[in-house]
Picture 1 (tube, helix red, strand yellow):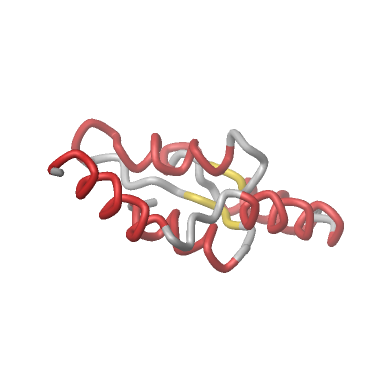
Picture 2: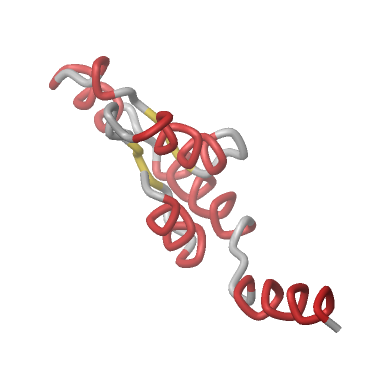
Length: 95
């Protein structure tokens, strides 16, 4: 659940199941994933909690409507022009 992965998922409007790498510095992958998950754009399972049955239960009980809803929520968070906006803000500060 790196920052680039999370933003790419939002950009394409896909629902995602995040399993953050537990040894990531300052647990930043969990924070990255939570951004999308807390706004309804996906699911998060900590690696320590991921078991075959946990994953099977999630997938077997997944309704198409829930998947589509999560995808739509993720898409609402996309920032396609984020780079241009950041550059403009930096230029404004330096002029």
